[in-house]
Each structure stands twice: as C-alpha cells, then as structure tokens.
Length: 415
Image (tube, rainbow, N blue to C red; front, top):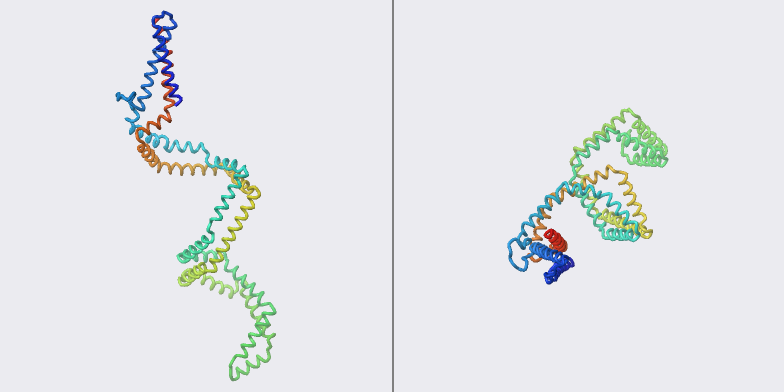
C-alpha cells in the first residue's frame, strides 16, 4: 500500500508542477519553461504507466477499454501456464535430482540433530517423548500376538525340506557321531558311579526272585540267585555295561557302525514321516498357545518395558549423555563411510524423485483446483498483494523518467 501511495504522490507532484508552470506560461525564463516540459512529460508518463498497471488487474476508471482487465480475462491461460511450468520445469526429474544432491539430506540431517541435541533441554525432551512412546507400547499384547502368529506359522510350515537339510548337515558335519560320543560319555559316567552299581544289583536281585521257572532251570536260577548277592550282581552288570559302551565308543567297531547306520537311517527317514512331522508341528503350536507360555511372554515383555523406562529416566537425570553419545557415534560412522552415505543419498533421492514423478500431476490438479476456487476479485487481490507493490514502482519510475525525458526533449527543441 505504501508503494501505491508513493506512485500516486509522484503523479500528483508532476500534475501540480505542470499546473504551476503552466500558470506562468508567459514568463520567458528558460528554467521555468524547462521545468514545464519536464512536468508535462512526467504527467504523461505517470498516467500512461498508471493505465498499464491498472489494466492488468481491472478496467481503468471502470471503462471497458479493449485489452484491459487482463488477469481476469486470461485466468484459464494463467492457470494452465502455472500448472504446466510446475509439472514440466519445477517438478521434473533432473531438477529435483540435482537439488537433492546439493542438499546432502543424510549428512545435513545428522549435523542438524547433533546441533539441536547440544542443548540439555532438547535432550530431555527427546527422552521424555521416548518414555511416552514406550509407556504406550502394548508389549504384553504384542507378545501374545507374536506367539499366536508363531503358532499359526508352525502349523502351516513345511518341515520336510527343513528336516532334509538338517539331516544332510548333521551327517555331513558328523554331528551325529559327536552327539553319540557325548551321550556315551555321560552314560559311562553314570554307569561307573557306585550308586548305579547298587541300583543295578537291587533291580537284578528283585527280577530274579520274581521269575517263576520250574524244574531244573528253576533250581539253577535259585542257586544262582542264592550265590550272587546285590553287590556282586551290580558289579557284574556294571562291568558288562561298561564293556558294551566301550565297544560303541571305539571308532570302526561293528557295533558303533551299525548304531550310526540306524541313527542316520532314522534321521533321513524322518523327512518322509509325515505323521511324525504333523505331530511335531502340532506339539510346537500347542506349546506356543499354552496359557502359561503366554503369561510368561507377557511378564517378560512388561519387565523389559519397565527396564527400558528406568534406563531412559536414569539417562534423563544425567542430562541425556547416552543420547548424545549414540547420535555422535552414528554421525562419526556416517562421516567415515562416505561411499555408503552416497549410496544411501542416491537411493533416497531416487525414492523421492519416483514418488514425485508418480504424484506430481496430483500437485498440478491441487493447484488448478485451488486457483479455480478463487473468484475474480480474490485472484486480483491475491496478485496485487504479492506483486502489486513492485508494479506500483513502474508508475513512480514512469513519472520520474517522463520528467527527465521531458527536460531532455525541451533542451533538444531549443537546440
């Protein structure tokens, strides 16, 4: 508005100067004649530029002169040109990509975050926000949902291929032999215990007494049972078992090879045992769906939530030192991984460009729709508000330039 007043004032000054100098037209002083020529041209220039500027937005003095009120008359053309420029020039792939490369989004964001976290209040605000998020996380329900999902996956899973791979790996890596050796070592330790010998002796003695055998065989059994007490029978059974286990632990022995062959056959055949696989899947699913498992998972999830909240509160009391350390560690890592950052920058830029390319027509439609919603008066007021002040300087320049040109033309006429 100030520029409009300045433009009006410049025209008023030129008109007043022209009126005053015209009143002294009979005065033969050259300076007065020179000023009259300048003011006359200034009035002409000011009026001409006022007409030109006004004709852009409305009809001058309300007169419907041809080629005036240009913005309203050319509203569809202006909108089409604006949308076309937006889609083809401002939002084209090349310009967006070049601009994004200059921005250095990842490094710039990292540096901005580090600067903001230099203030303790910002660090505490971040930790408070994290606490609010963690408090609202329904971790107990999430744990239950995960268990339900795992149970469903267990029922749908195809175990055949997995079992085949496991069996192949076990045989190739000789894990079955290692497992057998471990089991046999544990068996040797258990058999060699005195308590085991006593237990074996008692069991053997009881079983011999339970035998119901008649005739000579019965007499022989009773004689053997009477001759052997529990300690002797336990020691004998221990020796027999240890001898048998030793044969199984000896590499290349017939008993060991036969046992491994049986184990491997069972392991390979397990992949074809659909009934066993189905039972295994149902067993796993039933265990995951068991109420006690759900309660255990929910309790652990809530415990984790409490520990995380305590850790955040402790760090907040300390001024958010761990937050700063974590952010700086990430920032230092990014500064050292130049190639990786550039790769991420390129991928991020490509994603942004792809999204804009797919949706830039929506932006054009939105701009067109919003501009079409404006009536003629609102459109003119908006443009006058944005660029009217600069256009008013055209009037000021027209009056001043007209004044100077008038003086020059007066001098030229004299010459």
